[in-house]
Length: 240
Image (tube, rainbow, N blue to C red; front, top):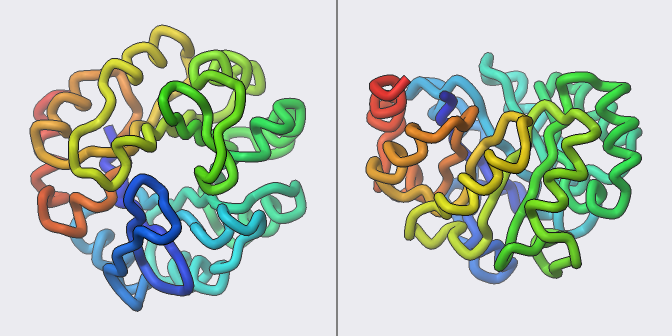
């Protein structure tokens, strides 16, 4: 099971938002490239990079930094935030990103996701960000009518390589993940699931490592030192 450190980019810096709120940010580093190198040096096997400016504005804004990260690390990277055209996705994949994460546009256009999964097999993941059971879009600024579970069922038909499930109410709060929603998701879909949001202690890592998930994305807790990457990997390995 992958432990995936999160690098959230905003204004060229590495930040964390609390519950995805634009104005509730903590800057952890002015140099995201150093941060990426550091996670690799600490044993990360995969990185999760999100362009928050892109998510809010509808097109990636920090691709220069993403390009530098790709050049500086050898481990694969998944990338999301503002990917709303096939052209942008092709450009990002051509940079050397392992897979892209489609969020808002997947809701508006499941048939487009189908097309992408056919064009770029194994390289399209779908992010499902849930707020009180409903799917949130546009950088989490609004919710739509889809429930997370019904949307997961719908989007699975396109055969994405993974579903990245985030419970927004838990994100950046260091209060633990939403285990019951994840369990519901496993019963709903067969697509590999990656958990995100609220993972704040080794106890959380242990609880998640007992579930049939493909990986977990950890952000704030790694930056604050609540979780050490090496210890989280150890906990996971002892349960596989």
